[in-house]
Amino acid sequence: MSGADRGQRHQDRMARKKALVDESIKRADRDQGLLLVLTGNGKGKSSSAFGMLARALGHGMKVAVAQFIKGRSDTGEEAFFRQQPGVTWHVLGEGFTWETQNLARDTETAQRGWAVAKRVLMDESIDLLVLDELTYPIKYGWLEIDAVLADLKARPAMQHVVITGRAAPEALIEAADTVTELGDLKHAFRAGVRAQQGVDL
Image (cartoon, rainbow, N blue to C red):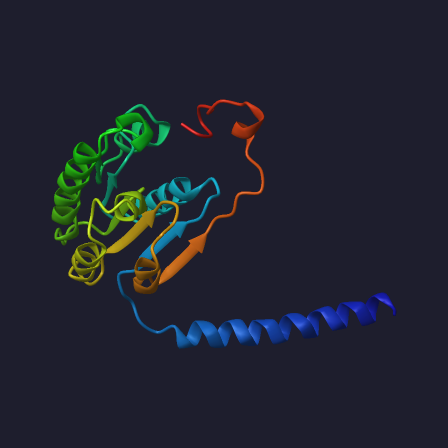
């Protein structure tokens, strides 16, 4: 096959692809607040959510973060985003469950945290809310999934919510508009490399 023939085949293939993409774009004709779930065992769930946070800020939107489980306030993302106008940041956890080792206290902490998150969900001025690591309090039974879903459904119509964490329950996946599962093929930690600033912290 000559170079000209290959070029023509490529052009024809791209023209067909463009027609399909254009038709899909045409069918997507409404706006709404989205519920996104980032789950799976792979690295990058929170990082992806914070990327959306940066994108929203770039559009002049007002954003908020509610972090469950994580109890530290020395991460690079928090240090950066707290300096930006239009950002509200809540650290609602006390650390991972193997650190706290207290079921009653973990449950109380999660429920107190959800009360804060619920207030943010009711705030019409918040355009995008990241509920970081929310799947864990649901999975462990510290928060009732039906109550969480009801509060999410009652939020302002154009408010976007991003939920991160492993093992997202099926009911949350069903309720979401977009679900991404991040896979874990390889991780430096298993080779003895500690969490690195700028990559993990």
